[in-house]
Length: 208
Ligand SMILES: C[S@@+](CC[C@H](N)C(=O)[O-])C[C@H]1O[C@@H](n2cnc3c(N)ncnc32)[C@H](O)[C@@H]1O
Image (cartoon, rainbow, N blue to C red; front, top):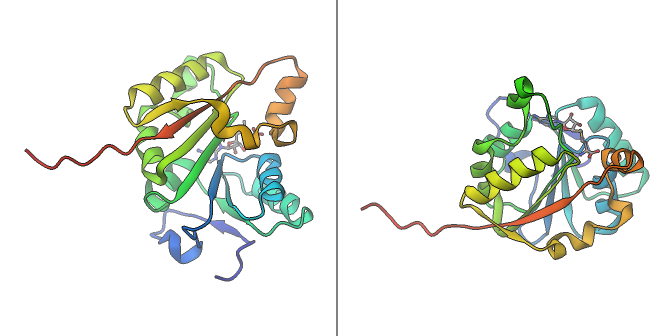
């Protein structure tokens, strides 16, 4: 597949993801959703050259920064996606194509009247489960205690995930993997807890 290091602009036009981006099933595939300036993506790309990292953000300017950072690091294992997150998860990615999804320091939209802008609401967990392989990991971090509590509640009541220990994200827990936002929050004296869940794949029991 050509131009693997160009930014792929995913629009609402019908597109078969596999036609524009190769996701070999024998590779460990990570998604950094809402990757921002890409510090986490670039750190993963450099540390794990045998993995494929999908970096996705709605802002083209940010994707350009991520691309520059990754090119400077000399890594060739990142695919750059300028896309809306829910569209990517619900409409584009094939079933069970990812080993891990990272959603790190997403905008918390703390005001009541802005809650609807949040990426993670109850309808997010079905597509999240769909794109993860069986046993795939959802990794979440936020400095906002209320958002953390809400995401824990929604994930665990969805019936689609089970909480696992942070051993599942130990390989990306060192200080070199801190995101730009995480570094800022830590510099301000805040804590940024990280949590991980495993995707369950309930057996299809048929119609009764
Ligand atoms: C608070 S920043 C965090 C960036 C990065 N993960 C970090 O921790 O430094 C949230 C990022 O999510 C992106 N974003 C927000 N809503 C989005 C959406 N609906 N689809 C895709 N990206 C989105 C924003 O453009 C921004 O880069």
